[in-house]
Amino acid sequence: MSTSEEIEKKLESLGHDLPQPAAAAANYVPAVVSGKTVFVSGQLPVKNGQMQYIGKLGLDYGIAEGMKAAELCALNILAQVKEACG
Image (cartoon, rainbow, N blue to C red; front, side, top):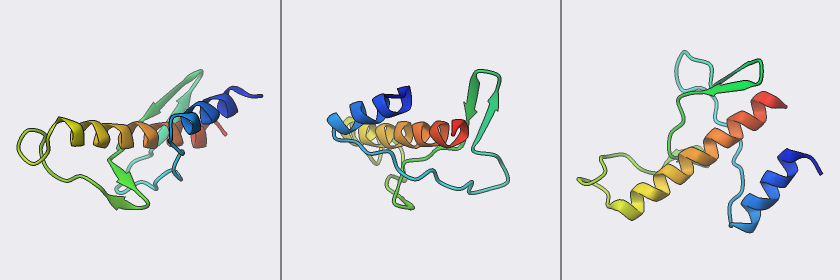
């Protein structure tokens, strides 16, 4: 089993699925590979193509919602890394 498959199995066991990597929303590249490093930018709390959270933590959202927004961003980062690395 490859490392990618192991990571996806672990995510599934935690109740998460990797989303399809989102296309860039502006004039930038979502991920760049340089040697053994992947640089990822521009990831937002998007799910199924829809922004899930717009606002400010502490003003519009509490800690629990902030954690969910960060979780979505992290899953989108992992999806971009997977896409960039093949």
